[in-house]
Image (tube, rainbow, N blue to C red; front, side, top):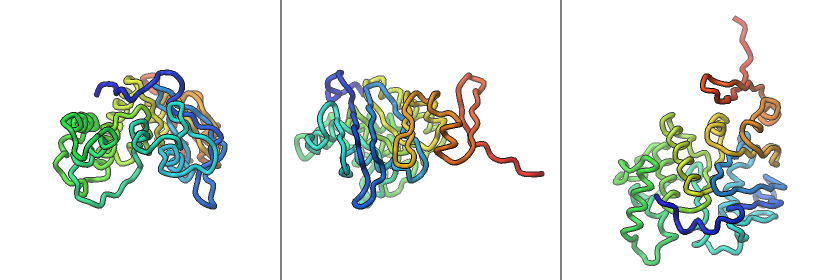
Length: 271
């Protein structure tokens, strides 16, 4: 897919977060959150279960109101952007989405084009963009199947394709490979590389630290309701920090190809 005109101005960050507090009525999950995402960046959001990664992504997408602070998309506060235009600027793939109606995969992906359409029906261009998105997300062969018939991994690829069809400059992904096999984890890294090459910015929540080392240009680490680290993966993913955040020991090694890897250090059991 070629770069979209919706990428807008090249000046300034795609996303700026300032003094953000987010959570739910009566329960604050994150506080004092500040960071930026620029074009050409893949920013990995890391942290233990329950640390607030999904809550943060839902807040940044506009699905969950913030408790305080400021979120700016391409220089404009999110509250000032109408939902339709926000859908042209920010794409969001949730970790889980339970389908209810038996739409075909093609119909689900075409829904990503609704923010660009002017009428009730999709255009030929919408169909072309949806097909290109399905091909990129490796679900084109599923196009005529019902979304209700798919496995978790297949549904993830369809949700990714729907997001890609939006052609937004900012893409938010919540655990996009949690149901994927190894080949599709590698394919996701290739998709991220392609998107940043088009000038997009990516923020994705991950549990796999080595995928962050493989794909990310920066890492944000969330712990105890705050961002405790922000920087290049090789500088952030060090045993001292990881042990504090995850509560277990880690080893850091360099593999035969010169790539850094980190692993939990399991205690030896007596023979």
